Length: 268
Image 1 (cartoon, one colour):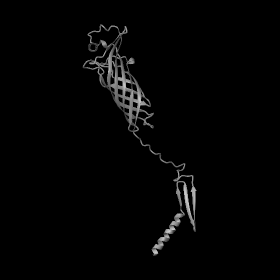
Image 2 (cartoon, rainbow, N blue to C red; image 1 turned 180 degrees about the vertical axis):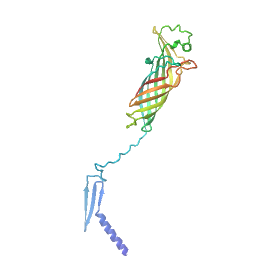
Image 3 (cartoon, rainbow, N blue to C red; image 1 turned 45 degrees about the vertical axis):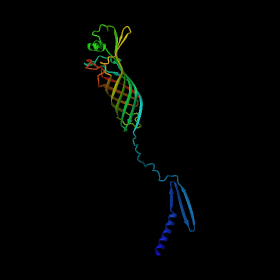
Image 4 (cartoon, rainbow, N blue to C red; image 1 turned 60 degrees about the vertical axis):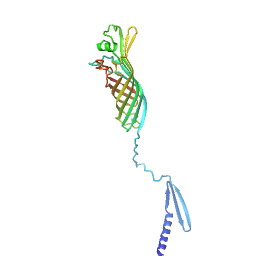
Protein backbone atom coordinates (compact mmCIF):
# COMPACT_ATOMS: atom_id res chain seq x y z
CA UNK A 1 0.00 0.00 0.00
CA UNK A 2 2.86 2.39 0.81
CA UNK A 3 4.42 1.74 -2.64
CA UNK A 4 1.18 2.71 -4.40
CA UNK A 5 0.96 5.95 -2.44
CA UNK A 6 4.60 6.81 -3.23
CA UNK A 7 4.16 6.15 -7.01
CA UNK A 8 0.97 8.22 -7.07
CA UNK A 9 2.74 11.13 -5.38
CA UNK A 10 5.68 11.00 -7.84
CA UNK A 11 3.30 10.95 -10.82
CA UNK A 12 1.41 13.99 -9.57
CA UNK A 13 4.62 15.93 -9.02
CA UNK A 14 5.90 14.98 -12.53
CA UNK A 15 2.67 16.09 -14.19
CA UNK A 16 2.76 19.35 -12.30
CA UNK A 17 6.36 20.01 -13.48
CA UNK A 18 5.66 19.02 -17.09
CA UNK A 19 2.62 21.24 -17.20
CA UNK A 20 4.80 24.24 -16.46
CA UNK A 21 7.50 23.44 -19.06
CA UNK A 22 7.33 25.33 -22.39
CA UNK A 23 6.46 23.34 -25.51
CA UNK A 24 7.76 24.76 -28.83
CA UNK A 25 6.32 23.89 -32.26
CA UNK A 26 8.04 25.68 -35.16
CA UNK A 27 8.20 29.35 -34.17
CA UNK A 28 5.33 29.07 -31.65
CA UNK A 29 5.88 28.37 -27.91
CA UNK A 30 3.09 27.18 -25.57
CA UNK A 31 3.45 27.43 -21.77
CA UNK A 32 0.82 25.98 -19.42
CA UNK A 33 1.06 27.04 -15.76
CA UNK A 34 -0.96 25.79 -12.82
CA UNK A 35 -1.21 28.05 -9.82
CA UNK A 36 -3.34 26.58 -7.06
CA UNK A 37 -6.72 25.75 -8.52
CA UNK A 38 -6.18 28.02 -11.59
CA UNK A 39 -4.51 26.98 -14.88
CA UNK A 40 -3.15 29.59 -17.27
CA UNK A 41 -1.93 29.13 -20.88
CA UNK A 42 0.62 31.45 -22.52
CA UNK A 43 1.39 31.38 -26.29
CA UNK A 44 4.49 33.11 -27.67
CA UNK A 45 5.26 33.54 -31.39
CA UNK A 46 8.89 34.09 -32.46
CA UNK A 47 10.20 35.47 -35.75
CA UNK A 48 13.24 33.20 -35.82
CA UNK A 49 12.67 29.69 -37.25
CA UNK A 50 13.19 26.54 -35.28
CA UNK A 51 15.73 25.11 -35.50
CA UNK A 52 17.53 28.47 -35.83
CA UNK A 53 19.31 29.40 -39.06
CA UNK A 54 23.10 29.62 -39.08
CA UNK A 55 24.62 32.95 -38.22
CA UNK A 56 26.03 35.27 -40.87
CA UNK A 57 29.56 33.99 -40.25
CA UNK A 58 28.51 30.36 -40.32
CA UNK A 59 28.52 28.48 -43.67
CA UNK A 60 26.89 25.22 -44.55
CA UNK A 61 28.31 22.82 -47.17
CA UNK A 62 26.61 23.12 -50.55
CA UNK A 63 24.62 20.06 -51.57
CA UNK A 64 26.25 18.10 -54.39
CA UNK A 65 24.23 17.82 -57.59
CA UNK A 66 23.80 14.21 -58.68
CA UNK A 67 24.23 13.64 -62.44
CA UNK A 68 21.25 12.18 -64.29
CA UNK A 69 21.71 10.52 -67.67
CA UNK A 70 19.95 12.25 -70.53
CA UNK A 71 19.86 12.44 -74.32
CA UNK A 72 19.82 15.28 -76.83
CA UNK A 73 19.13 15.61 -80.57
CA UNK A 74 20.21 18.26 -83.07
CA UNK A 75 20.15 18.86 -86.80
CA UNK A 76 23.47 19.75 -88.41
CA UNK A 77 25.15 21.06 -91.55
CA UNK A 78 28.67 20.15 -92.63
CA UNK A 79 30.98 21.48 -95.30
CA UNK A 80 34.49 20.32 -96.07
CA UNK A 81 37.27 20.42 -98.64
CA UNK A 82 38.96 17.32 -100.02
CA UNK A 83 42.72 17.56 -99.58
CA UNK A 84 44.61 16.72 -102.82
CA UNK A 85 47.21 13.97 -102.71
CA UNK A 86 49.33 13.81 -105.84
CA UNK A 87 51.47 10.94 -104.65
CA UNK A 88 51.44 7.56 -106.34
CA UNK A 89 48.16 5.74 -106.01
CA UNK A 90 45.82 8.77 -106.29
CA UNK A 91 44.31 10.52 -109.28
CA UNK A 92 44.97 14.25 -109.55
CA UNK A 93 42.28 16.45 -107.99
CA UNK A 94 41.83 20.23 -107.79
CA UNK A 95 41.67 21.01 -104.09
CA UNK A 96 39.81 24.32 -104.17
CA UNK A 97 36.98 22.86 -106.27
CA UNK A 98 36.74 19.45 -104.58
CA UNK A 99 34.35 19.54 -101.65
CA UNK A 100 31.91 17.64 -99.47
CA UNK A 101 28.49 18.79 -98.20
CA UNK A 102 26.26 17.01 -95.69
CA UNK A 103 23.03 17.57 -93.78
CA UNK A 104 21.48 15.33 -91.16
CA UNK A 105 20.48 14.61 -87.59
CA UNK A 106 22.68 13.89 -84.57
CA UNK A 107 21.69 12.20 -81.31
CA UNK A 108 23.82 12.04 -78.16
CA UNK A 109 23.46 10.00 -74.94
CA UNK A 110 25.19 11.67 -71.99
CA UNK A 111 26.38 8.99 -69.57
CA UNK A 112 28.52 11.19 -67.29
CA UNK A 113 29.42 14.88 -67.14
CA UNK A 114 32.48 14.19 -69.29
CA UNK A 115 31.45 11.31 -71.56
CA UNK A 116 28.72 10.73 -74.15
CA UNK A 117 27.96 8.33 -76.99
CA UNK A 118 26.35 9.53 -80.18
CA UNK A 119 25.31 8.77 -83.72
CA UNK A 120 24.27 10.53 -86.92
CA UNK A 121 22.15 9.85 -89.97
CA UNK A 122 22.75 12.12 -92.95
CA UNK A 123 22.81 12.81 -96.65
CA UNK A 124 26.28 13.56 -98.00
CA UNK A 125 27.46 14.84 -101.35
CA UNK A 126 31.01 14.64 -102.75
CA UNK A 127 32.34 16.57 -105.73
CA UNK A 128 35.88 15.70 -106.90
CA UNK A 129 37.23 18.02 -109.59
CA UNK A 130 39.70 15.94 -111.57
CA UNK A 131 42.47 16.68 -114.03
CA UNK A 132 43.17 14.59 -117.13
CA UNK A 133 42.43 11.21 -115.57
CA UNK A 134 40.59 10.19 -118.75
CA UNK A 135 44.05 10.00 -120.35
CA UNK A 136 45.09 7.16 -118.06
CA UNK A 137 44.80 3.98 -120.21
CA UNK A 138 43.13 1.65 -117.69
CA UNK A 139 40.63 4.31 -116.60
CA UNK A 140 39.79 5.08 -120.24
CA UNK A 141 39.27 1.43 -121.10
CA UNK A 142 37.31 0.56 -117.93
CA UNK A 143 35.12 3.64 -117.41
CA UNK A 144 34.93 5.29 -120.85
CA UNK A 145 35.18 1.98 -122.73
CA UNK A 146 37.41 3.40 -125.51
CA UNK A 147 40.97 2.57 -126.47
CA UNK A 148 42.25 6.11 -127.21
CA UNK A 149 41.45 9.72 -126.40
CA UNK A 150 40.73 10.95 -129.92
CA UNK A 151 37.13 11.76 -129.00
CA UNK A 152 38.13 13.83 -125.95
CA UNK A 153 40.15 16.67 -127.44
CA UNK A 154 37.87 19.53 -126.35
CA UNK A 155 37.14 18.70 -122.71
CA UNK A 156 37.04 21.65 -120.31
CA UNK A 157 35.79 19.93 -117.16
CA UNK A 158 35.82 16.49 -115.54
CA UNK A 159 34.54 15.45 -112.14
CA UNK A 160 33.42 12.52 -110.02
CA UNK A 161 30.21 13.09 -108.02
CA UNK A 162 28.54 10.94 -105.42
CA UNK A 163 25.21 11.23 -103.54
CA UNK A 164 25.36 9.15 -100.37
CA UNK A 165 23.29 8.01 -97.41
CA UNK A 166 25.60 7.88 -94.39
CA UNK A 167 25.51 6.94 -90.72
CA UNK A 168 28.12 7.24 -88.00
CA UNK A 169 28.85 6.32 -84.38
CA UNK A 170 31.15 8.31 -82.11
CA UNK A 171 32.34 8.78 -78.55
CA UNK A 172 32.46 12.30 -77.10
CA UNK A 173 34.83 13.34 -74.33
CA UNK A 174 34.55 16.77 -72.74
CA UNK A 175 37.97 18.26 -72.18
CA UNK A 176 36.27 20.84 -69.93
CA UNK A 177 33.18 19.31 -68.24
CA UNK A 178 29.97 21.27 -68.94
CA UNK A 179 28.01 22.84 -66.08
CA UNK A 180 24.60 22.77 -67.75
CA UNK A 181 23.78 19.72 -69.83
CA UNK A 182 26.55 19.73 -72.40
CA UNK A 183 26.62 23.45 -73.19
CA UNK A 184 29.58 25.69 -73.81
CA UNK A 185 32.60 23.49 -73.10
CA UNK A 186 35.36 22.06 -75.28
CA UNK A 187 34.83 18.50 -76.52
CA UNK A 188 36.49 15.87 -78.70
CA UNK A 189 34.63 13.32 -80.87
CA UNK A 190 36.21 10.14 -82.21
CA UNK A 191 34.15 7.89 -84.47
CA UNK A 192 33.57 5.85 -87.61
CA UNK A 193 31.26 6.47 -90.56
CA UNK A 194 29.73 4.23 -93.21
CA UNK A 195 28.27 5.43 -96.53
CA UNK A 196 26.25 3.94 -99.35
CA UNK A 197 26.36 5.71 -102.71
CA UNK A 198 22.77 5.94 -103.95
CA UNK A 199 24.01 7.71 -107.10
CA UNK A 200 27.52 8.20 -108.45
CA UNK A 201 29.00 9.08 -111.82
CA UNK A 202 32.03 10.40 -113.67
CA UNK A 203 31.31 13.57 -115.64
CA UNK A 204 32.91 14.96 -118.77
CA UNK A 205 31.89 18.44 -119.94
CA UNK A 206 32.88 19.62 -123.41
CA UNK A 207 33.62 23.09 -124.74
CA UNK A 208 30.46 23.03 -126.87
CA UNK A 209 28.35 22.60 -123.70
CA UNK A 210 27.76 18.89 -124.10
CA UNK A 211 28.04 16.47 -121.17
CA UNK A 212 28.68 12.76 -120.83
CA UNK A 213 27.98 10.73 -117.66
CA UNK A 214 29.66 7.39 -116.88
CA UNK A 215 28.33 5.34 -113.97
CA UNK A 216 30.59 2.28 -114.37
CA UNK A 217 29.34 0.06 -111.49
CA UNK A 218 32.34 -2.26 -111.83
CA UNK A 219 34.84 0.59 -111.23
CA UNK A 220 33.15 2.78 -108.58
CA UNK A 221 32.80 1.37 -105.09
CA UNK A 222 29.23 1.91 -103.73
CA UNK A 223 30.30 1.47 -100.08
CA UNK A 224 32.77 3.58 -98.16
CA UNK A 225 34.00 3.46 -94.57
CA UNK A 226 35.93 6.23 -92.86
CA UNK A 227 37.27 7.34 -89.48
CA UNK A 228 36.88 10.88 -88.21
CA UNK A 229 37.73 13.23 -85.37
CA UNK A 230 35.98 16.44 -84.36
CA UNK A 231 36.90 19.14 -81.88
CA UNK A 232 34.32 21.74 -81.02
CA UNK A 233 32.59 24.07 -78.61
CA UNK A 234 28.92 25.01 -78.34
CA UNK A 235 27.36 24.65 -81.82
CA UNK A 236 30.53 24.63 -83.95
CA UNK A 237 33.03 21.85 -84.57
CA UNK A 238 35.95 21.29 -86.94
CA UNK A 239 36.41 17.79 -88.35
CA UNK A 240 38.98 15.66 -90.12
CA UNK A 241 37.77 12.54 -91.95
CA UNK A 242 39.92 9.82 -93.53
CA UNK A 243 38.52 7.22 -95.92
CA UNK A 244 39.45 3.64 -95.03
CA UNK A 245 38.20 2.16 -98.29
CA UNK A 246 38.88 3.00 -101.94
CA UNK A 247 36.25 5.15 -103.67
CA UNK A 248 37.40 3.65 -106.97
CA UNK A 249 37.80 -0.12 -106.97
CA UNK A 250 41.53 -0.66 -106.82
CA UNK A 251 43.51 -2.63 -107.75
CA UNK A 252 40.84 -4.97 -109.12
CA UNK A 253 39.54 -2.56 -111.79
CA UNK A 254 41.56 0.67 -111.59
CA UNK A 255 45.21 1.23 -110.66
CA UNK A 256 44.49 4.35 -108.55
CA UNK A 257 41.74 5.88 -106.38
CA UNK A 258 40.70 9.31 -105.07
CA UNK A 259 42.33 11.21 -102.16
CA UNK A 260 41.01 9.97 -98.80
CA UNK A 261 41.20 13.04 -96.54
CA UNK A 262 38.54 15.71 -95.96
CA UNK A 263 38.74 18.68 -93.57
CA UNK A 264 35.82 20.92 -92.72
CA UNK A 265 33.36 22.51 -90.31
CA UNK A 266 30.10 21.30 -88.75
CA UNK A 267 27.31 23.58 -87.50
CA UNK A 268 24.59 22.30 -85.15
